[in-house]
Length: 381
Ligand SMILES: *Cc1c(COP(=O)(O)O)cnc(C)c1O
Image (cartoon, helix red, strand yellow):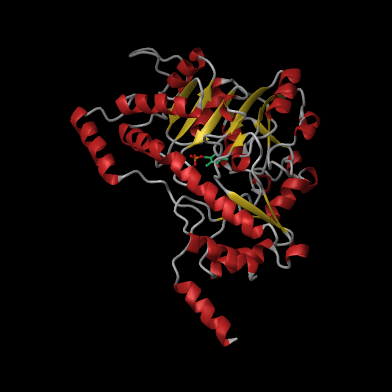
C-alpha cells in the first residue's frame, strides 16, 4: 500500500506525456525567412512562399494540383461548394466533427454509414443501402491515415453517379503501391493543424486532378475573385499568408524524419503490446506507406480486465495523456442525433469501437523512457 502510494506520487511529479507534440521548424531558419517577408512587404495573397509551398507539397505528396487553405475544415466546405453537392451526403460518424459539420454547413443532410473494423473507414458493403434519390456524394475518411477501400467506393459512386470527396486530414503522405491516396475520388482534403503529422500552425489543403478545377478552387478561396473587378462565384476567404507558408516550407524539410521517429515508436508499442490480451492494434499493411499519425489501441474489457475508460483515467493519474479518438461518435451530438441514420443499431461497429478506443501518445519526440512509462501503465493496470 505504502509502496503504491509512493509510486503514484512519483508519477505525478514526472513530466506530462502528451498524446501529440507539434513539429516545429528551426527558429533561426524561420527568422531568416521572416526577414525576407518583412523586406518584401508581401505578406499574403499568393506570395512567393505560398507559391513555393504549393509546388513543394504537390511534389512531396505526388499530386498534380493542390490549393492551400487556412485550415482543414474550409477545404471540406469548399469542395462541397465547388462540386455543387446538394441533398444527402453519405459519411461516417467515426471522425472528427468537422467532417459532418461541413456537410451540414452546405445545407446538406448527412447520412451515416457504419465503419469496418479493419480500417475504421466507411464499410463499402453498407453504402448502397444508404443511397436514396437525393444522394449526391460520399465523404469517406481515411481515419488514422489508414486507406479506405477506394476502389470499391469508386465503383459504387460510378454506378450511382455520385461524387466522392475524401476527408484525408489524417493521410498526409500516405501511399498505396507508390500512389498517393489523395489522388482518389473527385477531391481530397488535408489538415495542417498543429496536432497533425505535418502542420503549418493552422492550415489545410484541397487536392484536385485538373488545372481547371484548381483555378476554380483558387477563385473560391479568394471571395470568388477571378480578376481585379470580376467575381465569378460566391467565394470565401481561405488565403494562406506568407508567414505560415514559410513555416510550412521549413516543416516539409523535416517531416520525413518525424514520420520515421513515429514509425520507431509504433514498432516499440507493437512489440510490447502484442502479448497483452484484450488489446488490439493495427499492424502495417504491405504496400502502404503509413504516416503513423495516431496509435489507436482497442480495449476488450472482458479479456483485458478493465474498461477503456478505466485505463484512460489510470493513464491520466500517471500523467500519460491518451485521447479517446473518436468518442463520442459525431452521430451522438445534439445536432445529428435525431437523424434516422444516427441510431446505434445502424452503426454497431462504430459504436463499439468508440467505446474501445484510446489513442496512445504518438509523436516525434517520445523518448524510450516515455514509451516505457506509457507501456507500464497499460501492462500494470
Ligand atoms: C483535424 C481534422 C479536420 C479539421 O481540420 P482543421 O485543420 O482542424 O480545421 C477535419 N477532419 C478530420 C478527420 C480531422 O482530423
